[in-house]
Length: 204
Image 1 (tube, rainbow, N blue to C red):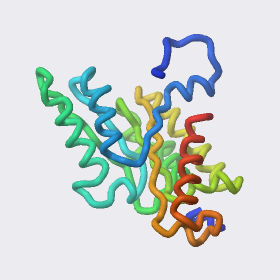
Image 2 (image 1 turned 30 degrees about the vertical axis):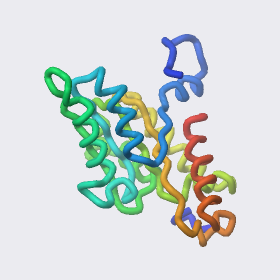
Image 3 (image 1 turned 90 degrees about the vertical axis):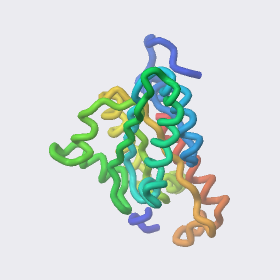
Image 4 (image 1 turned 120 degrees about the vertical axis):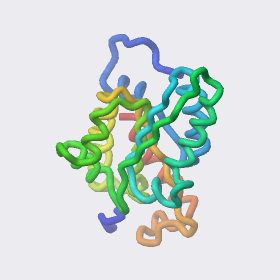
């Protein structure tokens, strides 16, 4: 295997750190429309401004201006347009081609980097998108996945410090599966593994 690819929260009570994290974490699917309408309904009705930060790679920024950031901003603007005064969504991204969460976590801990600067500001939602194969590696017990999980939790802590809910973005399987990893050699196999690995972030 190649390592290159390789009910709303109740008011705080005494509970474990894991339970607190699960309570903070918002799970998401891969569709930007679903994400946007969810945020529009929940955030747009409560805030004049909805602030969303995307952290990921080309699965987030590809096809600009109709990428995830662009689509989410347009839908949030529409969802808050009826407010008085109208809401204005702020949607920002810190992305780089092929980037993995462990690289983002390192940047987030390094003063002066774009992600460190971004996370010093308040956000309503921080969306974390891992490289498109790595969540599927959970089923192999891969150290690559273990590093990803550790990095996700570190970034989740930083998102919480900025006042945000964390969204784990579930990416989509490849049409022909992951040919570099035979166990993920079909679309259904890859998608199932991606879903299991991504949802596991929320269970920690």
